[in-house]
Image (cartoon, rainbow, N blue to C red; front, side):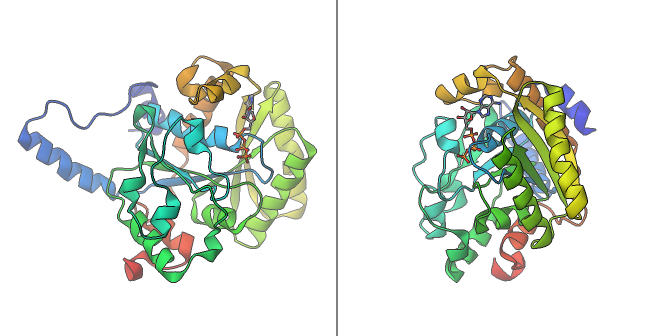
Length: 311
Ligand SMILES: Nc1ncnc2c1ncn2[C@@H]1O[C@H](COP(=O)(O)OP(=O)(O)OP(=O)(O)O)[C@@H](O)[C@H]1O
């Protein structure tokens, strides 16, 4: 099914249901199909920003939630290892987090939190640990955890930390798509440029998708994008694509106070409509050719180690 028609066929709020009143035989068939489906390629989208406070986590949470609402099997990974806040934004209470997984104290399944509309969330640790500090055993644990993820999955959205910490570069390099969120502040523009420069020159990321957040109107968003495009075109060898803009909208702040995604709490608001349009665009991005399916490629690119050697 074409991506756009899949969105139309599964309106926001519909979700997907695999169980229900199926007979045992049908259930077995469904399980078999689900196993097959597990091997389908997974789209991994890293959301990043350079500067903090520009709406990176809001975009991550709402992009993931909108995809889940449209029926995509979606996982939201909070990879902000220093300042985790996806769980707070969604009112979730994590018992365990990525830190426990890295310490080998639990598996990925033990971390999964259920957000509305079937969205699954992996919470980060609120500590100061950095990916670069991981030891060999932790690396192997991380690889095994992601390689063993057995549920059907279409998209994984990764909310990275702000800045150019090594965790940001690692996750962005490993993802197929890097979304850079900017707003109309000089520091946001310069930091986004600095991030794109490092990711492209040092880590070979060839393409970036830009989202303009907290804008007055569509023209304002486009103008922000063109400001960055002018500099990247002049100094860097990268492709920059404009995904769209999210207006400054009180509904988004109100949703955050209620610990809900705005696409869920106020689906008709301007911010929610814009964020659902971003999800619609993201749903059409091709999964890179050459991906072998599921999360193995992501794990390999994350750690630079073939998953087959580690698993
Ligand atoms: N489109 C918007 N309309 C109105 N307010 C917004 C919008 N986007 C973000 N905000 C406001 O900006 C604040 C910061 O947003 P968010 O936490 O998503 O940013 P961040 O870039 O992830 O920050 P950090 O890097 O510190 O985690 C939100 O609490 C909200 O008040």
